[in-house]
Image (cartoon, rainbow over all chains, first blue to last red; front, side, top):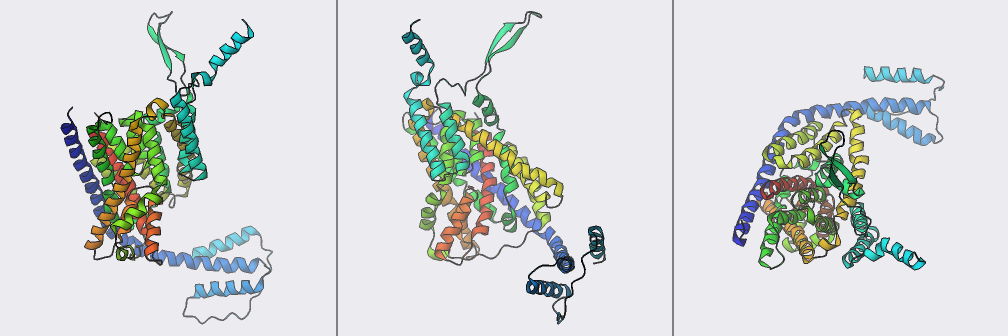
Length: 123
Length: 404
């Protein structure tokens, strides 16, 4: 391969093969990915319920900790607790928070963790 | 020995006496590159080590890129001929082994994979096509470089032309990987051209994008991408590795490491212990390799090779490569726009030249100029990451067909 036309001709072949390969490989992958979508649609449905569940688990934890830890901004605290309760109970409940009492926070840390653990297991 | 003679002798050991004009010019070029990296923010992460490596390699008598010297001697005990190291070779010579043997670029690819979210691509597999279309820039430039053989004194061989073409992949590690294998003597100019143009993507692309599309096309709002499940994200890297390596074994080291990094990233959400590996791949390991790679690639830019009309040709061809890639992506985007009845904004096509994530940001910006409430960024990320896979595939083809 020495003359210009030979080299350039081979270059054209390389170009055709190269562009062709790029398209073939990536089109193949695109089809396989579309196939993946069908498989994972079932997974996606399961995942949705999972997400809701985890949200519910989170809310009581917030209530518990907020009750225990006294903060300065009482109004904000009340709003957070009400919101957490509303999220936990669902939208159908017409929830009115009438009073929020602070519980003495002298339970040891281990007891608190144990209580939280039990709550997670039940829910 | 008189004072004058000894001073003269000492002057002889200094670099000034041995400096050639090419080395002087290269040192000045390295200063300009350092300025561009620091002051103008041209890909500073790589351009700064490259520029400093260039500086180090062109300092006369420092011998940083010197090869080790061996002598064959007769072993006094056994009487056999054995190699004895006379000089150990320079620091940069040994660090450069990682480039020469094709070790650093795949390691960087692993880090890139660990940082990349392929979600937008999985959500919209059609964008893979745009990643393929933008690789047209590589091959047109390859042909352009071969056509320069008609100009006397400016010829490029087949492997050299392939290395120049890969600039159009807009993917630094891929370009360095291929060039180190096919035409290592051109590594300096090709790396500088590739990284400079990647930094200039926001200037190069918009005029081409605007010239090839109408205002209505640019204003197209695309449908929101569907959420992608964890299972898909885990299967994706495995699938790509298997498919690409079976079709193109030459691309395995690049694609395989890219996908290993990505698998670490996605699997870390399931097994939190994998977080450590992911952090290392995308963090410290990548940083270490970037320093080694940048410095040694810069050090290949020796004055006597770099300062030739061929370098100017490479820089011109590199610009052509980027422009053709952009045009190819946008034109294919237009075809897809027509085929889907106006659901695809052709601007995302230009992101098919890799240059992650700069090219996607350019699509976003140009799209927003036409329609201020349009957000193309995530749509453009699909072709953008597909471009990385596409240029690795193109590199695999060039590697297996032009390695003569």
